[in-house]
Length: 299
Image (cartoon, rainbow, N blue to C red; front, side, top):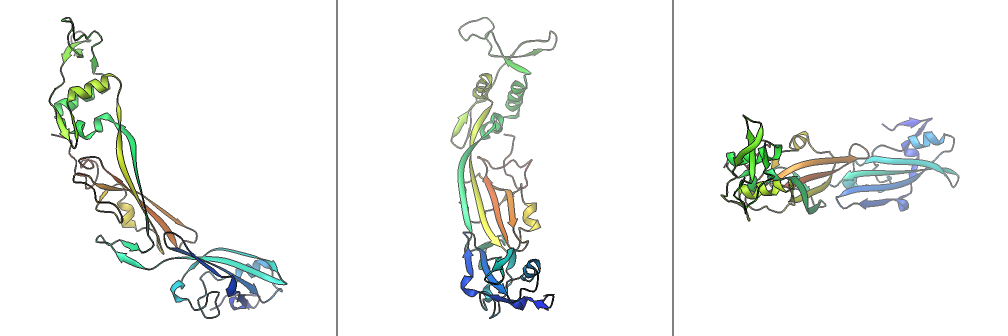
């Protein structure tokens, strides 16, 4: 039933079809701009604005005719003003395109979906490097003690001297002094294309190298829908996922994680959603922390 204001219904708007415009953005969000004249000036400007329907009229007398493809488009903005002796109303309606195809995991992909990919580096703790994680537990414990100060670099170490010829020292419980020689293993471990020993990492820490730059692949899936992301998808943020829509296939030992979802809407019915993913380092994400992670910490 048409809403009325002072006996004037929404049918009292004469839509000026030549001023209608349809725009589709890069992710398939349809924005329809319309304009019409109110067939009365005996009402207030606010009342004229109230006549604008919340859903796009798609009848033959509507601003774009009987365009059933855009039926259900919801209002995003509206305005009213005085022009040519009558009240003029303007509005924009939005709707997500409905053409979709289904991915194996059940998520919908639109023909207008767009993707963005960035390959960057980010700083990580040196002991989180896949090679360091693959060291035997004893060596990882020693490196952790070196990081925390329970083991220190011997300030008097001289590889050419026979006096105090040990590079790292631990605390002598009896004296409280750093006088117990600590020997890091020379045994090398290989992960991917990187080979190193616990001693090599100890020497990096010794000179103050406590972080490294990990290469990271970030992928975004940008889509428009008539609904926001689902609660099931929200629950997957922070979890390992299978192949994201439009993402490259990773090499063996690497995994994708859904790291964020951004939903935006101007009317609560038409949504633009960005799903953000990040690839792991070699070995995958840590299984003791992340759901679906494959990387283990013990050799």
